[in-house]
Image (cartoon, rainbow, N blue to C red; front, side):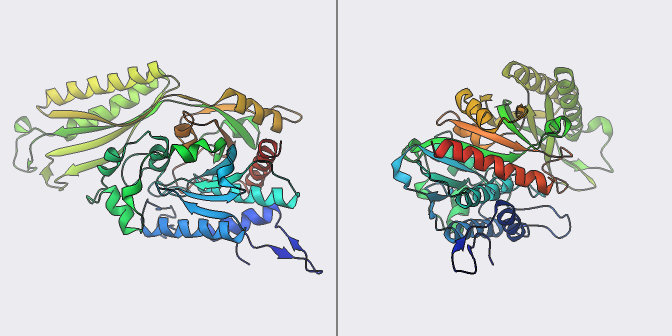
Length: 423
C-alpha cells in the first residue's frame, strides 16, 4: 500500500489510516530520496533530480487523498481540500529541499505531518467550513542559489523577477535555466497576490532547531518570533603566487584576513549574545602550493533584536577591513539576503495556544532560524508549531526526533487545523 491509500474494512467501507500509520508510511517512502550513501545526509537541492523526486512524491500524496493538486507560477506545490477560490483558507506545510548533507526532519517533517494531520481529521469525520491546503514551498534552504526561501519570497513580492533571474549556482547555471531544465516555465515567476489573498491563516510545523523543548520536557511548542538574520559575502582579494618561493613579507595572502575575520565573528557574537558563522568558503586558485588570489567567505549572523545584529555585523566588517589592510588585501562586503525580526501574529498565536493548552500551557519560544512562515508573515497571518529535538542538532545528518514526538506533532497540528477550519 502506498502512502495515503485508503484502506477497506471487511464490509467494504473505506477507512482513512490513523495518523501514526499514515505518518510512518509516508516517512518511509520519502526518507530515501536524495540521501547520500556516504554521509547519510540529504542533498535535495532546488531543481535537481532529487528535488524532482520529492515533487513527484508530493503530487502522489495529494492524488492518493483525492486532493486538488496544482503548481503555482513560482514552482510551489499545493494540495487542496475544498474550493481554492472560496477564500479564507487554512494552509499548512513547509518544504522538502535541504542544505548540503542536511537532516531528514528540517522541512519534510512539516509536509509529512500536514498530510498526516488531514488523514487524522478525516478519520475523526471532521466537517470543514473553510478550504484547507498543504503546500511545499520551493528552494527554502537556498543551498543551490545562495538565497533562502526563494519560492515564498517570490510569491510574497519579497524577491523581484529581475533579482531572481540574476541568481546563479556554483556552476554558473541561472535560476531560470535550472527551472526550465526541470520542466517549469521561468517566465511566469513573480508576485502572486491573488493566491495569497485567498489564505486566511498559514501554520507551519517544524522540528525545533534548538533544545528549548527538550529542556522543558514538552513534545510540542508554539513559535513567538524569528530573530532578524542575514547573509553577507566577504571577498578578500590578494595576489596569487608560489607558496614555496614567495617570501612571507612579499605576500598579499587573502587567507590571513579571512582567518582573522572568522575569529572576529565568533568573538563579537559571543560578546553580544548573538550568533555569527562563516560556514561556506571558496578559494581561488585553490592549490596546495599556491597562495590564493581570492578567498570568498559567507557570513550568517542572527540576533534577538535588530540593534544587536547591526552591532555584531558592523564589528565583524570593521575587523575584516583592519585585517585586510594589514595584509595589503582588498575587501568587498555584499549583503546577499536579509530578513528583519518576525513577530508572528499575536491573535493567531494566542488562538493556537487556546486550542492546544491542556493541563499545562504549551511553551511559546523564539527561534534563530528562518522559515517560509516568516517570509509570508508580512502578507498573511502566520504561526508555527515546533516538535521537540532531543539533541538540538539541525542541518546535519544527526538531526533527529522521537517517533512519539512526531506523532504528537501530527495530533497537535490536526487539532489546530480543526480549530481554525471548522469553526
